[in-house]
Length: 365
Image 1 (cartoon, rainbow, N blue to C red):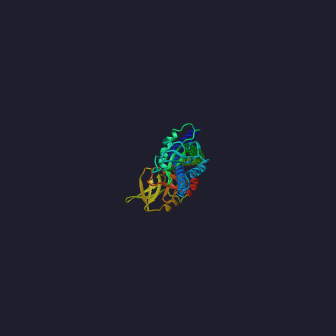
Image 2: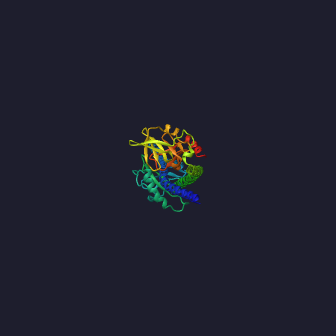
Image 3: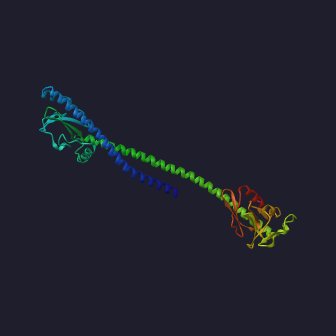
């Protein structure tokens, strides 16, 4: 139940973060795409307007009759695709001279349907967008075609002007389509990203859980082994306590006591009173159960060769420990053992991985 709740909270957190990022990104991308669309529309329509104005001006300069020019222009504008926009011609009085819709010819051009008021007005994508958005919000029924003049270019040698119109309904549809496309892309991408993330988290979590289980099993085995070691130490200590060291050491090569020094005084110490022996800075110290410490001139190798191996164990190059002096055995590092002794040792007593097996054998394990 906890894992399911954790996965749900993870999913919810990622979804919230993605939604926050997507909202900012969508706003920027939609606005950027809208500007690119309007910029392309503006650029194309302006070029088309200038081309038509130049063509009409050239015909008038060639002394072509105005009626003939108007007829030709009207014929070329008739049937124009009105999807995004179209061109029209009107004079300085505002009367429509040519228009794709023949019914509009001769009617006055409405100033309410224009984003520009003179030939000097020049819209860019940003200003066009700022003018267009409020107009889109005021659109009437979608079935009614609404157009706006956004560029005017004068015709040389005449009182005519070429007007570029934009179809507000078509622009609105294009913008809505752009928004829907971005929303769909981000929604699908969001679902893919979030689900992929959750699945990945679950897979990683399951792998981690398996590793953790294996680690726990290994740890349990180590705890069991350490318990066995400590129990074996206790059993061995009890066995030694029931059978004095002097009886165990039947071999004449094993010493019964060690000669040590305390300052300039020579003191013999019975081996059953020794807790551990160690070297430090080339000096060999003998530590007794009563916490007294003395020194000896013998090396650890010389001492260990003359001690009862059933009572003493060479833990490493620095320590010899007595079975009765072992307080506890704990795990240390990778497959190493740390011996806690009584009385305490200022230096850690570590049994390496290679000597751990010998130590267990010494404890009859």
